[in-house]
Each structure stands twice: as structure tokens, then as C-alpha cells.
Image (cartoon, rainbow, N blue to C red; front, top):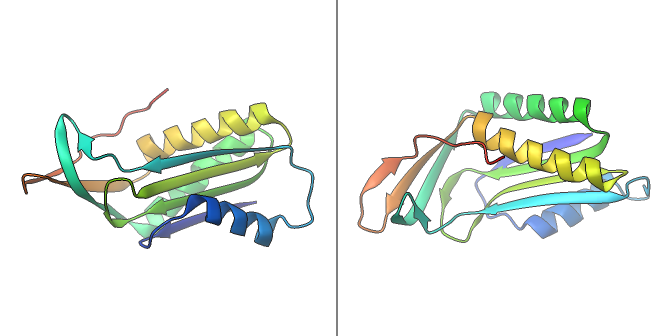
Length: 148
């Protein structure tokens, strides 16, 4: 089972995990591991101070690609549940941008799948980022790279 949420409003990742577990996994005790990644906005990029970020996406394309990478992870690892929440719109330094959470019977699968999902999200999912620098100038972020 998986859930994908794209939202403009503020994201509290720990509350989102608690809500997901309460709503989707209550009474189930077959998972032995939960691995999470929480990404926050930095106040710098490419050597410049960043004031804010505007994140755009194409809803159907974004959700389809996220579903594809979740399906790919499910083929590689034994996963029980996956939750991905990603912010769009205006985002400010220290705001949470993304949550990836994976539940599995064993920690190895949870750790490896969580990293895979985050790296694939960063390099494959169509999000477009426009930064506003502290000096008032703006620029599009041209690339995301795989971190592994």
C-alpha cells in the first residue's frame, strides 16, 4: 500500500507519520522497521544566500512518476507501506519540503528503499524550482543530481 500527497500547506513530517500509521496501519504489527527521510529547505545554494523557493509541478505527471518509482522499489525490496509527501508553492528556509517514509518487516529493506525513493524522486520526478536570492534576483534551479 502506498500514499502520495502533494500539498502547498506546511508539512509536519512527524505528525504526518503518526496520522498515516493511525489511519492505515492501526492494529497491524507485521512491520519491524520504519525508515524516513525528511528534507528541508536550505538558506543557500550554489554559493548564494536564498530567501525563498517557488516549487512548481504538473500534478498528473508528478504523481504518475512517483507511483512508478514506488512500484520499482516494491520490486526490489519487501515493503509493506510507503508514504511520500512533497510540498509545492512558496517554501522558506528551514521549511520541510519532502517526507519519504517506508515500512517493512526488516530494517535493511526499509533503509535501502527509503534512500532509493528519495534519490529517484530528486532526479526523476518533474518538479521545477525557482529561487529568490537575498539580493532580490531570481533563477531557476537547472538540475538535481543523484546523491548516491
